[in-house]
Length: 452
Ligand code: FHN
Image (cartoon, protein in one colour):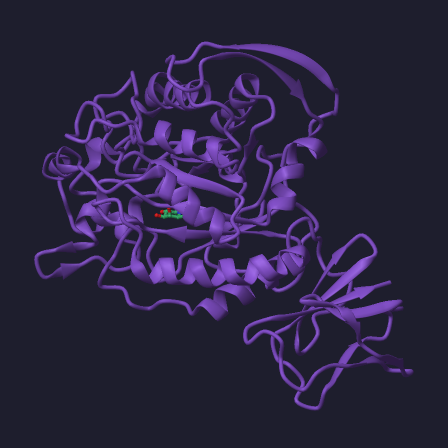
């Protein structure tokens, strides 16, 4: 991962924008790396949105159902480029309401939103001047989704971030010329490359990324994906990273901008790679990691809308995953796959609501918190903030005695939701015993605040 020397200087960036919403001359203070990452480190919880033409398909073609992620419909359901083009031509999500989406994220306790501006299918959700395969030129919708979401995020004070796929199954200079005879096994096969890929990188990908960074105000994170293809090189990754930071010096970029990612585990291998944070996918590391990371995860088994997938994680599980991740020093990027009309699945909304109820009461123990300095206790997790340790109890003790790590020298212990009634603590040689009510204050995760 790239560590850059910290010089603080002022740069003036004339943001010549499309003149709608973000047109402004702006003075940008160039932050040190630590300052630049601060909002993201403290945010802890974000919303991933996978939305595109695949959201119309829902992972189904006749009786065939795509295995895994429905956003892979083009590849998995064997569409030719021409056949697939009819979906962007149909894309007309009349129920899309950017303000409502952002509000749902905010109410759930999420502090940032990362939307797929272009996924592997190659269809762009903004008004791209270097492409006709976008929401303005190809679709009847003719509304710039990225612009509407960026504005809604600004209005509701939540960070706006974009996902961008390096892989492009539509562009003839990327993987578009390989369909329909392209299968998943060939994706990182060094013999299956497009010699024109450098042209796509220079004349399409970089200009598109530049559009996203110049026309929509501050971009919190640029979240790349598709780093695994052989066409893409570490030189391109490093060039892209600098290119982005030159346009928006304070933007954060994930490690998939380069080639260092170690599979789904998501952290970088040994070496010099660009990128500001690791990206474990569908998994949470066993222990804390001492560099920035964010675990991204689906609520069922698919990133894109897939009505046939009813394998939903429970709200309780998702809340405990959030706590687990924060206790290990990471962020949680939780996915929603809206449908082709622009609606969040009701199952997702229910889970967002439950998470919102919990974060509203217990957010103090999550936002701005850092990893636990203690080993994982049997009953749950610890997080830390300054002079305070938060004990997040998943399994509330029926005995009324909570066994805490003996190294905790507690001055005052309370339930986070009942700050006025102090709990009694007794130190033994093996542990610190805390007298707690018999009934768990929260059915999912109850938090005890321990002031040291
Ligand atoms: O292939 C994609 C997948 O569709 C999804 O976007 C996830 C999100 O992290 N990333 C890829 C696989 O690593």
